[in-house]
Length: 260
Image (cartoon, rainbow, N blue to C red):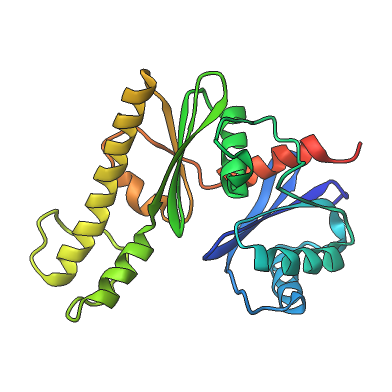
């Protein structure tokens, strides 16, 4: 393998997603738990194992790009990757070229995960766009026909909602996120599964409809994030699931910023 591979890392509140690109091609993606207690050595060992499992040496990389919504973990992972790969690292944040026109009251407030999602969106799909990223929080991003990032929504994620429900009630159990057999649940667990699944799916359908009404035109809708494959199939709307959207965005941002 030549030295034209790029390591892309997305640090989220629950998971870190690691992707490896060669040109436009994604060679692999892997997911690990975000651990705020880990030292950079512990991240080196973990990331090295992931690379080895995929038959890749740490010194095979031309560069690396990181997006993160967990500041305390960013520097630890950055130090780990620098030591492991010996390459320059681009961190998505202020001062990075993205090609995105952000129309928020304070553009610097936009999380780097949403920036990467939006950059991939405008480069790969027809605008206007609605991007639904289902992670610890469910975020909705809206991009108009002129590729302006208008804003969107932040919604408690499914697990966050379920965990708080279980903690605040004395008789409701912790449940997994499997699809219920039918909408009208016949026992406590089925009622909870049906509730979280169909309420979330219907909520997404409803939110899309209202955003389109406000914009005055139909949108391409894309969903990504760890929980999208569980919920989106229950939606009535046509929604494209692209689990690698964020990593593709990081690759595009990397190419815009690499030292020529």
